[in-house]
Image 1 (cartoon, helix red, strand yellow):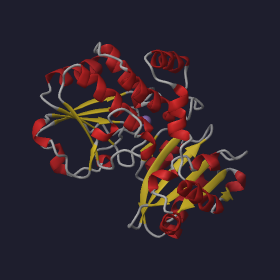
Image 2 (cartoon, protein in one colour):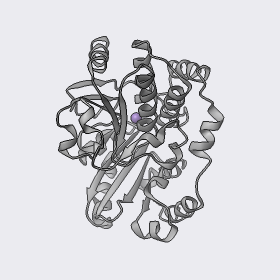
Image 3 (cartoon, rainbow, N blue to C red):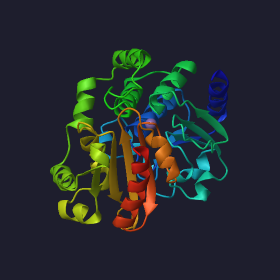
Image 4 (cartoon, rainbow, N blue to C red):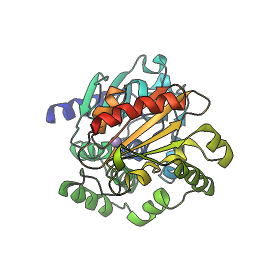
Length: 323
Ligand SMILES: [Mn+2]
């Protein structure tokens, strides 16, 4: 572990300019890690930018300097960077950027997904880490960088969201010790929880109502299925990022061991399929069989076809879990 963290430190110290990025449809861990590392490196006098194909979801825009994140398939400061740091992203394609983005720069891959494809020139993959944000915490400590309130807020968001608000089995004593340090450094749990969990739009609630109408229980009560299609977005005015957390309503049912959410990508025939499991079932392996990846209890994949075709494919694989 010390070996890869030393390579990471070296690459960062040698860099002329750095861009931090994360996966498409970014989550709290991707964005929180990005914001945290941005402040730590900038405070150390390094030239650093942030760029994501899909920008920053609304609920994370309270994080300091989140508006500095540029978005789209073209990164405006490409000439000024020679190091790309990919955060919380299991594969290069999931960054959603064209090949030109990677030209002329080293790629540093910092992640905790078991399914990570080690696509970087340098890879730091700690599958036991509760969140990529926790790896950023270690990196800041290891490099003796400043843990400012802005960085602490970012790491707190990363850990809060990737542990399911400290519910998941990745919530170890060490996680709580680190969280204590984050709070000491200025991260404030209640204001952060308000932003992340208690500031949903009415459009989101309307979309949730429609989504819950699609609930289907299968496999003798052990799997719960939810769906969001394009027509629901049109009807409610909600957007894709509003579906964050919907799957927990399926998993939250008594007796359900695996929850599945199928979401149509806007203007395409592709479906994002998200899986959550409770105890035994390894949905990371299951998503892997469908070309995706993730963790044991949280994973996903992207499938093309009609809803019926995609649902049938996924149903067969989920049913095998319970056979
Ligand atoms: Mn993560």
